[in-house]
Image (tube, rainbow, N blue to C red; front, side):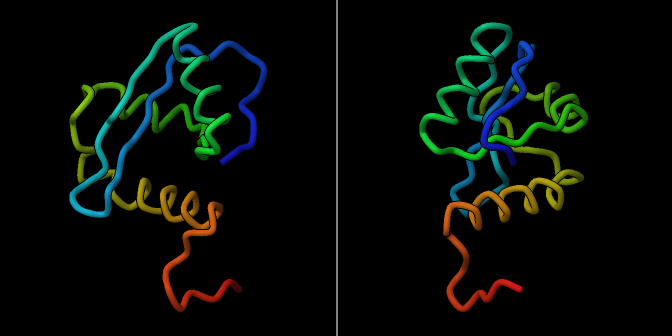
Length: 97
């Protein structure tokens, strides 16, 4: 997670949506200047941004509305858990170490 993504031009960005039910879903995908705008909008809204080119490459084969594949559940779950924690959304009874 980062407060700001590096100043380099972002070639591709995607957003995940997770409502606590089924697997996270690809909710947005943008390229070029639209990818830069998507990241900037997320940052302005206080949405955590995670930069991982390898994960992006694996998810880039999916379309908007597709669930992430089962082999990525654990990795994405760890990212989402950290993002929720950073936003103060830890589960009831959770104590940080």
